Image 1 (cartoon, one colour):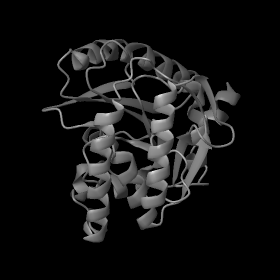
Image 2 (cartoon, rainbow, N blue to C red; image 1 turned 45 degrees about the horizontal axis):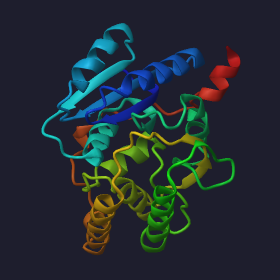
Image 3 (cartoon, one colour; image 1 turned 90 degrees about the vertical axis):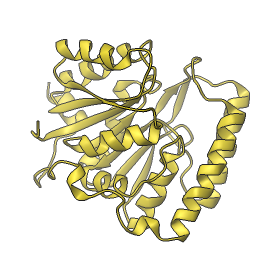
Image 4 (cartoon, one colour; image 1 turned 60 degrees about the vertical axis):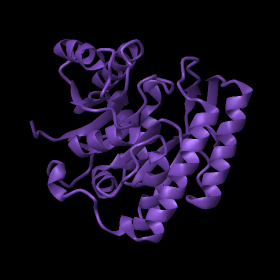
Length: 272
């Protein structure tokens, strides 16, 4: 199916059967009420708990949802890349399966891109307008702030929160950036932002409401080690000029959406 739409929500999933149902219901209901032409693409990254089958059962009653199952498990970065390049939306949003950012916050990241004010808009917990409904444990807050400080210094100066799980990209930026990405793991966000900066795309950080999921799988020590390794890989790839050329051919995604103004979630919601 190649019909184009206004908005694609890309949800990477690995063993998310127990969490993804309410997230899909909330996003689908919100966008349907807003009047968007939209799709929700779940990319199952080699789950072993029946996530893909569960999502496909939901999709039978919610036609805007589709599932892409990949094997074997390669990592969140790989799943997001697959989803972004398979997307049909003029605006393409990375959205985490745990629903830590309410669907009602989507206009904050979608609108700057849909209106042409930014090529990429990223949700942030650390800028004006942000709110935390349920905070992380203190050790995870400290780890998150330290990680963001290091990445600001090394890769993406000026960006306060690189890891928040809600990012919107124009179709052009999504295709151009994700065809160049090489990191399959958790640090793919850093790579995406670094490549976007190198290519001259504008990035806007917007405050969102966020709530910690106590079932988070982040392990501070293990993921810190992995993050440092991937950070060094990104710097090395940059130094070698690997991001100057796409790693994937142009035919890995659908045709570009037609030019012209696009409605935003906020405008459509207000018109109802």
